[in-house]
Image (cartoon, rainbow, N blue to C red; front, top):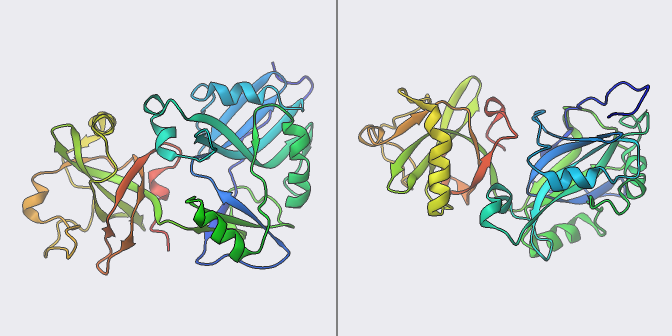
Length: 322
């Protein structure tokens, strides 16, 4: 049951961070580790707890341990912004472990809270970030929800420390920033220390274990552009799982507007007319997280590796990050 005499808590589209090449410096900035998981809101309304993905899908039953921790928050009504993460015994996150939990029993799924949007009848989104996060420790208490604590040091020191730990990146937020739902402005920025982003799956080359290689791309305007073939990062059971997820999406036509290529790619990332016959095309609705070394001069991914499928991001919003 929710709290009496109150309107139900509603979903808020998460505020997002703009990609930068270097972190901003100054006393007005807080720095946090960029966690490698699923962005989510946790909504507690009396005895009822919900987990909602960034595109408002219900994740509550998928992560029962996080849901149960949410019931122990020290508040009757609260909305927390954070990240669902799979961590090992040393607290190191793994997106692949979050994707394939049965294959990684040593990892625990937790919720890291980094913002507080509502507390016991008061909406906090117009208040400064420092005020919102100052209230988080008391709300979280000993619930089992974890806190994403701001990091001490300068931007350079924080970047070096996070890189040494092998973590994905750093988020910088203005201490005075309000929470602008659904916005990607100047108040929150992110620095990625390893190159990875989401791509749309447009096809695959079948193999003996399921998927031999994924064909991925990104939207430019209304058209889907090819970014590369992805063969690394798979285990046999992941190849089967991904093939199973793609089977209902089989399509007769190639969704990429720039295939086939008229000349071979220097790094073998292109698709020739002959290779087109080997591919199984799919409706471009699934999104995959891909790690890569660099973009080549002809706009393809070099040394790309599959990290997992993302069901928390709509394919139409996937663009090349620059």
